[in-house]
Each structure stands twice: as structure tokens, then as C-alpha cells.
Length: 220
Image (cartoon, rainbow, N blue to C red):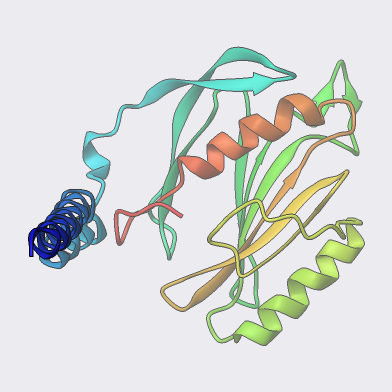
């Protein structure tokens, strides 16, 4: 009889430990995983958060890491808000800009280093080119157009550089990337010279990082 009582006490003790352990695991899970309703609220707030373009400074300094060394680069506000679609970004203060509208309805914005140094015209220079394709083109046409340009500039690698890209290629001579905004397709070319690629690429990526659409107040 005494033996039976001891066995029953052991069973009850072990059962009590199991319940406690289960409860502890549940409490721990609840403290780590947020409630579903809270997660939805945070996502909604993030989605509707817009950048107030009128409050942006006219100039700013950004850090560019070149060969492991951080450099301060001065940028100035580049306002293309009158284009359709309009955008703004920050570009290095020593770079020149031009905007060209073509008969097929496409528009090209070029941000570049000076093409003339000491009276010599440079055929190869650093530039960023943003081209908006005509409004009536579809996705397949846009991809084929950018594929052709990628082959022309010998950009054949498929490394993922920009998360928003529909299609992108890169190589020794830079990167080309296709995107879409409100039904309008566009592509961006970053073209450094071989001598300046280590310096120009991080600076160009800062220009793309600062890109803001005027109509939505959102970044690329």
C-alpha cells in the first residue's frame, strides 16, 4: 500500500512539471510574437507614410565609401517635378544636367560629369541616364528595349542591385535597370569610366537612393 502511494505521488509530481513547462513556453511565445492586429496597423502606417517634398533641404552631405574609406560628398537638390512623372533627387554639385524630349514620347534626363576637360572633348565619361519610355509601351517591349541596351553596353551579369527592378543587368561598364511607376516604364543607366568606377558607382547609388516621386511622395 505504501509503495502504491509513493508511485501515485511521483506520477502527480511529473504531471505538474509538464503543465508548468507547457505554460512557460506559451508565455514566452506570446512575448516574442506581436498580436496580428498590431502588425497590420504598423504595415498600414508605413504604407501611407509620404515624404513632404517642400520640407527637403536644398543641399546635403552624404557619405560614400570608396575602397573601404568614407568620403563626404556634397549634393544639391535636382528638381524634375515638372516632368510627367515628376521626380526629385540629390546630385553631386559638380555634375551637369540635361533634359531631352523625343518625338516618340520618351524623355531622357542625363546627369553627367563635364565632357570637356582642358579643351579636350571626352567620348567616355561618367553619367547617370534616366529615360521614361513612351506611355503606350507594354512590359514586354520595355524588357526587350533594355535587354538590347544591356547587350550594347556589354552588361550581361544578373546580380541583384536594386530591389524594385523589373529587369537589370550589370558589368564592368556599369548597370542598367528597368522600373515602372504608375503604369509608365523607365530605365536607369549608371555608366562610369573604367578609371573612376570605384569612386563613381557609390556616388551614383546615392543619387538613386535619394530619388523621390513627386506625385506619391515615395522613393524608388
